[in-house]
Image (cartoon, rainbow, N blue to C red; front, side, top):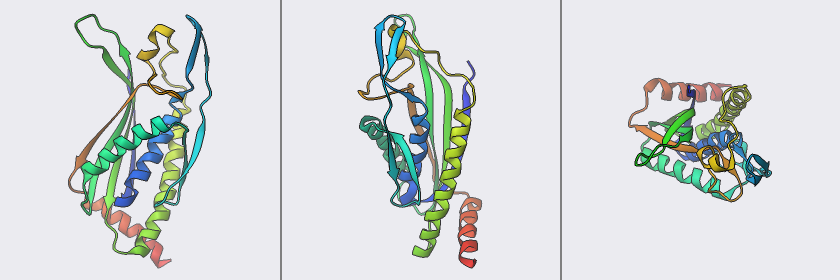
Amino acid sequence: MNCRSEALEVSVEGRQVDEAMLALLHTILLHRSTGKFHYKKEGTYSIGTVGTQDIDCDFIDFSFVRVSSDELDRAIRKAVGEFKDAMGNGTDGMGQISLEFYQKKKSRWPFSDECIPWEVWSIKVNVVNLANEQERQICREKVGEKLGEKVINIVEVINRHEYLPKMPTQSEVDNVFDTSLKDVQPYLYKINFQITDTLGTSVSTTMRRLIKDTLAL
């Protein structure tokens, strides 16, 4: 199986990291989740509904839609919080957070199940330090515009008719979906991240030039 890889990149200030990552990760998971499966007999099932919720950001001029599941939201927030903590409180920095979807392949005892990725989303995050509140306000608007573009890009990618794991039988549902949540059933996923201590000067310069150009208008 070929694993599909998609890359996104955003530049934000430190206080916007959480919201930007939540917006992108929740957008992807909204389209990679189903309602709970209710099996009547092997091979016959119905699928429950998936509720949605509009979320307004505090530090970005942006709203996004997420699955209405507190359990899923807590899991995503925990991963994003760990990512932000690992980045620290430095002025400039760079990191990458990845959302990997996989399915399990049962192995014979005593070997553990094999996890086979089928789609990976990598989000590169550049954190810049801004000088004053005026720059922060402009950044608030510009990041909102960029997130809107990224969300459209995500939806376009997901709407392509590409590989998805086939709907499993009742005995195999745990090999494809995370069935641990009571109100929604996302495809099996894991979130990883890595941190780079220093931010490339070209990235921070580009963001500051964008802000200065806006101030000059």
